[in-house]
Amino acid sequence: MICYKQIVKASALYDLLTTAAFALPVVATFKLEFLRSLHMHLQMQGSFPFFEPLHLFFVNLLGCIVIVWAVLRLRYSNPLFGLYDGIARLLFSLTMGYALIYNDVSSLLWFFFVPECIWGFVQLKGYQLHIHYSK
Image (cartoon, rainbow, N blue to C red; front, side, top):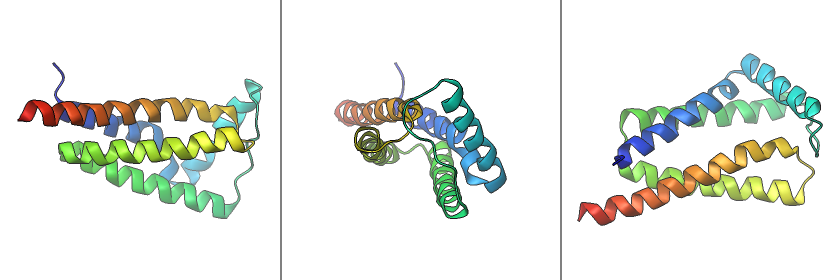
């Protein structure tokens, strides 16, 4: 049986792998260009805008916050952190879902939306089971 702390660590590792590149301005620019190219190559629906310096600033800021949060969960896989991460992922998912439904964003966002929903559900359900079996 998988320990809930392993789920918390796995989600943190996922975050590091998918988000770390967004923390560094030069690397983020390359990753965004890669995503734009993928969007164009796959002829996906929606738009993928060019990022201006202010957009890139917010991308970098979010990347930095995610890295710190991920490292914290890797080092101290406290079940409570998993609960809060699950809640944050569902909030992210709501924001992405809104963007997918009401804005003309690239359908490439689905590749971020689905894992966020899954990780959110897994961590929230895992926390519930952890609390139940800890009694």
